[in-house]
Amino acid sequence: MVVVLEVSETEVIRSAQSGDRNAFSELVRIHARGVFNVVYRMCGDALIAEDAAQETFIRAWQNLSSYRPQTPLRNWLYRIAFNAGMDMLRKEKRILPNAIEDLNLTDGRPGLESQVSQQERTQLVQKAILSLPDASRAVLILREYEELSYQDISSTLDIPVGTVMSRLNYARKLLKEKLEQKLSQVEAEYV
Amino acid sequence: MSNHVTEWLNAFYDGELKGKRLQQVEEHLAACEVCQHELDALQSLSGMLQEVRVPEFPSSERFATQVNLLLPQKRTPTPGNRLFEVGWWMIPVGLLAVWVFISTATLLGDAMSTAKNFGILDNTTASFISAPSETVVVTPTLGQFGMLQGNSLQWAETTENLTRSWFPQIVLQASVALLYLTWFAVWWTRHTRQISEPLLEG
Image 1 (cartoon, helix red, strand yellow):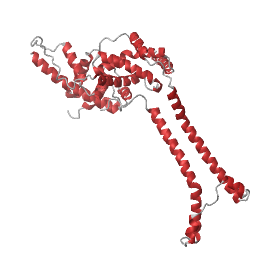
Image 2 (cartoon, chains in turn cyan, brown):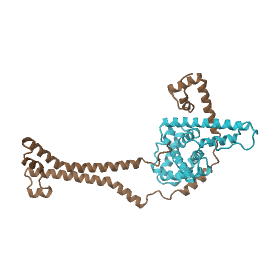
Image 3 (cartoon, helix red, strand yellow):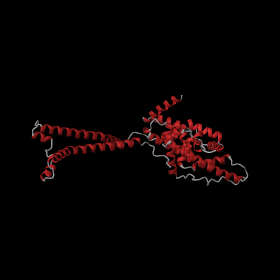
Image 4 (cartoon, one colour):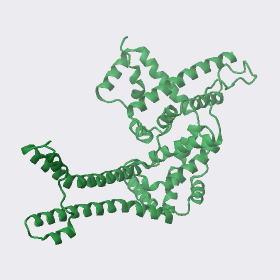
């Protein structure tokens, strides 16, 4: 079944490469959500993510002739998506948080709960992800959310597998430190 | 417990280890609480990351329609680009033509000189094709002043003769080859440079 799907997508790609807009729309339908998710994880803003996803597919259309089927189309699109997302952020002059220290979770309800609420914790985790360096964040997103293998991450971001491992180790270590510190602070404020 | 496997824990957790390394990490984890604790922390972190959801995405159908409307109407090259492309591909053809011309002219010139030396062609006919044969100029002058004599004079004459007849051709051929290699290098750069500028370095 997998083989059939791959062959089918290859044919659609070939048609799109020869200028068939309907075939390209089919590719957009298949990969839109994945591209949107990746960009959203990268920039943390739904509107920017949607614009960046559109930009990703426009760039893909313009450069489709340079796509080589040795790389899965999804990986090729993710690569464009990361660049489009970062370009969009720069254009929009939205600044990602450099640290999560600016996140104020106390809302004047001390003692209301002894634990940080689920929603607050999610918000904290997202801020922590966004505060990671771009390069490490990209690797983390592809591994944790897209579940790409190290080899696929390597080909998507065009970096050696060793670099994938070191960036992933760094990202997780940094996240763990930031979250442990912040969560213990916040919980202490509630107690 | 010494020799912790901390540096391999991420790869182990992600299922990227194989063979002896995998066995080594598994054995170590069975005996080391510190590393087991690190692995649990990785699992816990991953669980927290999964709690972050993405917002609702507009339907793929609608999104594809929007993208379709935004796509440039035609991906066919403009007349200017097409002209540039034609010119670009004419460069190696032109260089090949120049190389063929130089090689043919050289061969013809040599053939005429040989024919003239053997008396097959008279001077008048040969002069239409090959340049006047002032092939050796410097060496006899040096000989007149007594700076070269005997064998050394003969060697110098032969060397000058060869240099005068072959050097311009070598320079021309090398120039054509250099131009072709330059074109090839530029072509290769254009060919391999896809849309992927270096991504997220740092």
